[in-house]
Length: 327
Ligand code: GLU
Image (tube, rainbow, N blue to C red):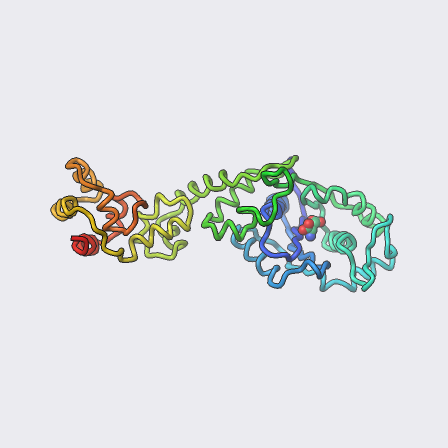
């Protein structure tokens, strides 16, 4: 499906960090619309989460999804919905429009807002397809031309049901916390586009895109995201996500506990220390040096960035200090 639209809206409920399926709607709306409203659907007070709106704004900013107007909260437009209800009645085709306490339901508020903000295309998940007939009817009864409705496939979990918000990587916040760069999440959502059918969530694909995204960052950008000096950047390069990059940075910036290893490789290292890092590693390998031991002494870890990159990121005096501490 491709849509080129005029005025669109993204309308999350303030229930905390965005589900990746909602993030897909946000990205799809942004791509399709040349004007976008951010609307907060907070008419269902029981579902609203304290701080939920702030989390959504943070997710959108992180993903680089910008909007032109809003956030507009439905809770601030209750008088407007009352006017509409006066024309429509409290029920329409058997569906409740106004709750007993006088607050509007999602259906009423959503249709009134879509009219008032001149929305031309409603792009949302398949789970709202059953609402199309009702929303169309409401708009027409209010004397408006209904927008075009486009429903995209949902993101499914392994069980074939809509991905649970508790599943691994199911929310934008959980991806951010897992060290996935925003570019990788955005690229995945762009790749999905507007799926006509439901799709299975592909976290391994996001992880592969994360490697590409890290590869595309300059040394300055990468080290800034990890929160370390740019001199450390060479040692961050093999990292598959930003959390791993943080761990790699730690192996350079934190003094390791002295490790007990055989001295031969370390003594040879001291003789070769003036060499350029890649050459030094080659020489050590050629004489059968124990590179694992050297890594352990230099970083305090058994695994990590390539050894030459560790040497490139670690000042020579510090290399010698760590080697001497082990000797
Ligand atoms: N608040 C609704 C949701 O998050 C919006 C649905 C719509 O776009 O109309 O599912």
